[in-house]
Image 1 (cartoon, one colour):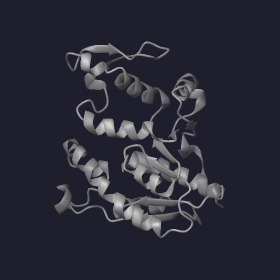
Image 2 (cartoon, rainbow, N blue to C red):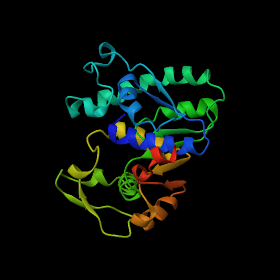
Image 3 (cartoon, rainbow, N blue to C red):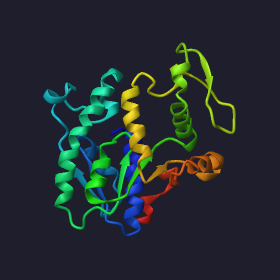
Image 4 (cartoon, helix red, strand yellow):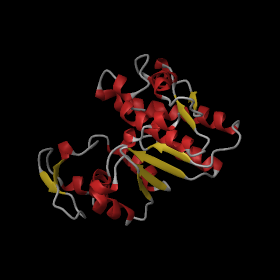
Length: 234
């Protein structure tokens, strides 16, 4: 539900479609309007726009259907909670879909999509717009409960379990102030059947292999914007 995630996911959808897969891309009306001009020529992708929860029910300003539309980062937690209301309409739409989904590829920040995969008995892959390196940093810091031993926002700590010495501060660590939300996201990622990274092997082969050693299936298929899907579709 962020522009920096939706565009790469649309590129992935286009690549899958070109290889013969039937692709349904579920989003919201505002985002569908932004994405539709980016669809490849003669695309067979089904772009489905499900209503985003009303401002009255969420407390968000009207039209805030993506993170970059939020007037303040302080509303990120509210926005995250609001996206969960898309579960029921997503299930309703897909129940009437034939054939049923054989795979669910979801933004890693939408952990409720595991319920969609569970309903249809489909594998669930999560998409990460970042790298294997950054994902390992987050995983290892949380697995070793490093932040609990850090006294201040500016105290430096070493990220454990990496082949190189990497130092961070709590202030630099993503989402340190929203641990409950991040715990849910991480749990959903851990239980996913695999992770798709918008990265490439030549950039971080060592970290890609380390991530695979966690037992997770990993695909590094980026940068997906370099795939000129519009030309391939002609």
